[in-house]
Length: 190
Ligand SMILES: Cc1cc2nc3c(=O)[nH]c(=O)nc-3n(C[C@H](O)[C@H](O)[C@H](O)COP(=O)(O)O)c2cc1C
Image (cartoon, rainbow, N blue to C red; front, side, top):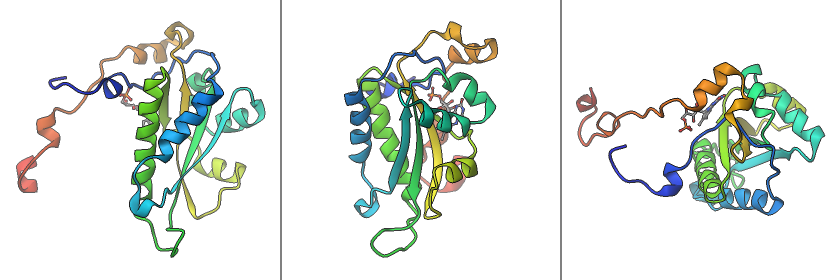
C-alpha cells in the first residue's frame, strides 16, 4: 500500500475461517442500522436483507443450502448469513431504479465499516443459486437477488480444508492506482 488509509478500511478483509462465537444481538442490529444509513438515489433505500443467525437453525440451513458447494465448505462455521436484495423500481413511480445495486453496495460498505469497528468480518459471495433463493424465500420479481454474506468473528484457519486455508494467508493484491485513475481521455488509460 503506498498511501495511508483509515483503519476501518485497512482492517477489513474477507476471511473464510470464522469462530463459532455468537454475534451479540445488539451488534446484529447495529450492522443493519449502519447499512440503512447509506446514501441512496432519491433516498429510495432499495436494499433488503434476509438473514439468519445459527440460533435459528431452520432459516440458517435454508440460507446455507443456497450456496455453491465451495462456499458451503467454509460458510458453515459462520454464525450469521445474509441474503441481499435490491428493488428494481422506485416505490413512488415504479420507474426503473438503475442505481439500486449501486446503493445496495453502499449499504454493504457501511455494514463492512460497522462490522470492522465491532471486531466482526463480512465475506460477500456471488457463489449461490439465485433462483433457489428466490423460490425458497418467495422473493417477488420486483427485487434483484444480489449477494450472500457470511458474518462473524475471526476463527482458526486450521479448521479449513487445506486448499482453502492457503487462500486465508494469500497476498492481498490490488491494481496500482495509476492503472485505475485517469484525468483525461479514455485513450490515456491504455
Ligand atoms: C460481490 C462479491 C462476490 C464475491 N463472491 C465470492 C464467493 O462466492 N466466494 C468467495 O470465497 N469469495 C467471494 N468474494 C470475496 C472476494 O474474493 C474478495 O473480496 C476479494 O478477493 C478481495 O479480498 P478482500 O475482501 O479480503 O480484500 C466476493 C466478493 C464480492 C464483493
